[in-house]
Length: 128
Image 1 (cartoon, rainbow, N blue to C red):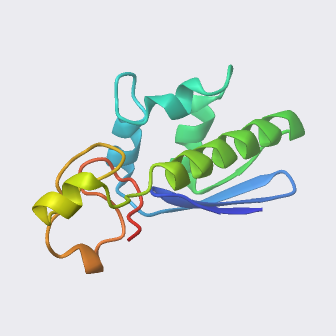
Image 2: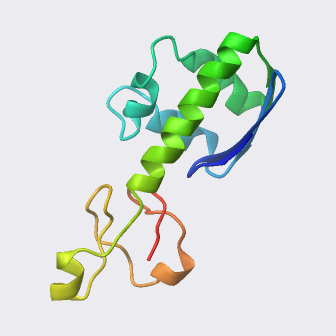
């Protein structure tokens, strides 16, 4: 299985997880800290294994037991689903002001939106 998330590409094959980072490691770790904008990702599942996740982000390739693999599948699916729902969409503010706003965090998006793939404020995927 393969996931394309806002902060990494993840792939699970057997008991092996591989990731390819899209953002700097520190930015990803910061976004998963308690109180960070993506803390919901850590709180989605009991015993998520954040330390294992950090190890995965640093090593890019980790072997895990089948129970932990299933947890990571569920977490990656939930993150992907949340990112799809929070993708930028045009709302009433866009029509009245001509500006575009992030549907996830509400920040005003820069004019060079056509070359951007993610919101610079929260990292949510941008779709027009």
